[in-house]
Image 1 (cartoon, rainbow, N blue to C red):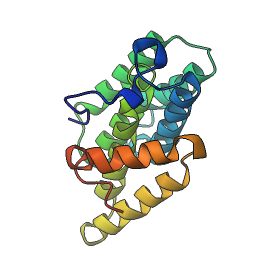
Image 2: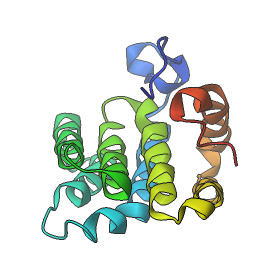
Image 3: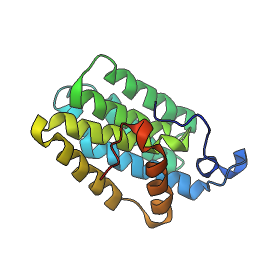
Length: 171
């Protein structure tokens, strides 16, 4: 479970009664797509003929440009998560990261799901002795990719939800 029981109004769009602007919602989706794409090779190395995670990331980006509707991005995210279902390890987490990135179009708070699953993918791909340090490096890399307008929002969200995100944001 990566979503809190009570939704944070900072991740609810203005038109739905929250405080999230469309511009920042798009930045969250783009950042989530960047996090997922960074580990996509871990899925594609094992399943090169399955395009669903890559398509989910493409849909997340297309949604920010107004090229696909929210429901299309959300459906692509579901398909990527379907690709993960029967897998284990890094490939599974990488596919889930892609799925989470695409569903940011529907629920902005999924941005941490994409990042957390990407960190889990890196940890799973690393030798056991280096898994924790690999995860910390990935976490720092992700933070370096944060656009300035959403940086503090995401960092605060990481602090608040770290415990329900497998404590992957301790970096």
